[in-house]
Structure formats: structure tokens, C-alpha cells
Image 1 (cartoon, helix red, strand yellow):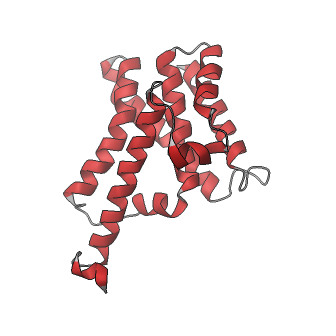
Image 2 (cartoon, rainbow, N blue to C red):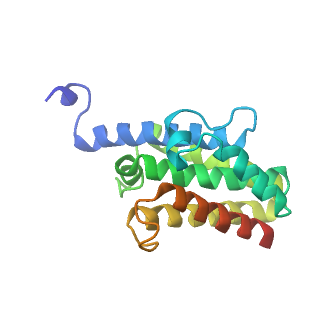
Length: 179
């Protein structure tokens, strides 16, 4: 009963937890986007068990013809999928259907996480394509993350975070080259 001293109902409590989740996702995306910050803490360690994943993503994306901006976009995608794999319950809660009008803090936190991706895409695209391209990139990584969590990427990837991260990196790098 202690949580109900701070929250009016279950939905308010879950919205507060989801808000924290989006704040953590934003931090993971910012760390992946900024080469000076790198991927730190448990998110970086759980993506594939290697602390050097961020450098590997940049190197492989650059080798495939993508520039520094493309490498950062690929790194964000891998960080997104790594976050989902490291925090599956929180990730699912963050994207569950909630009230028609989410609390202001939840809406702001969600927009902030998406804003990291949008900012990177806007730096890579003509302004008239940036909004659609950001949504397409988000849908791609979110789909991979959900398929991985649901175990629908094949038996060889089920429960294997390293293999899922490698798949995501390949698909995102391929996608980046196709632009």
C-alpha cells in the first residue's frame, strides 16, 4: 500500500515507472550517439557482453561507406535493442497502451528519447524527409527489439544478446547504405 501514498492509482504508478524507463533509454541513445561518451554502465555491458561494442559499430558502419553520422545512427539502433534486451519488462511497460492522454512527464520523456533519434536523422536528411525517416528508423529498431524479446528471430538468436546485437548492426548498416 505504500506506493498509493505517492500515486493516486496503479496507472499513475506505472506511468511513473515508464517515465523513468524513457529517461534511461534516452541516456542510452545519447551515449551511443556521442563518441566521446561511449556506452556506459549496465546498458553497454548487456548489449553483447563486450565493453567495446560502440567502437565496433562505428568501425563497421564506417567501413560500409557510412559517415560518422550514419555510424552514430547505427549505434543508436544497437543501443535501443540492447536496452530492450537488458530491461524487457520495463521496455514492454514503456510501450503499453495507456490512457488516451498520457501524463505530461511520460509524454515529455517519450518525446525526449525519440528526439535523440530525430536529431541524428535531421542531421543526415533533407528537412522534408527527416520526420518520415526518423519514424521509419524507429519502427525498424523497435520491430527488431520486439521480435527478439518475443523469440521470433529464430532459434539461434533466442536468448543470445550478442547475436541479436550483431543482427541489428548488420540490418541497420545495410539500411544506412541503402539511403
